[in-house]
Length: 95
Image 1 (tube, rainbow, N blue to C red):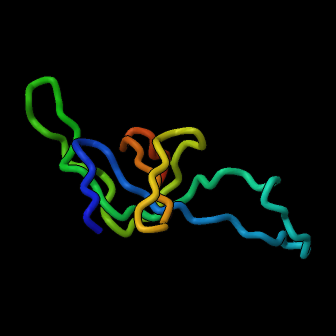
Image 2 (tube, helix red, strand yellow):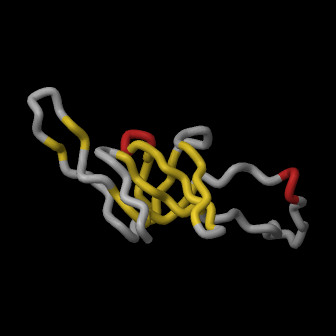
């Protein structure tokens, strides 16, 4: 991938929610929620601090993360949808 985020931004490839519930009910496209889980595919060099130094990112490429539902910007590259979010908008890393 030739998409390099700047500073504290992170590129996440959203993981789509299941289309079928545990009970076997098929969820139509218009009833699905926006994805809030994804896999980190690229990270910036870190957050610029007031003293001019950079704080290293806490996430790394390959981490599965949960991010805010309405955070970041959607971007499509070569037919694949990505989400570019600030590291501060990442709520948790899935272990």
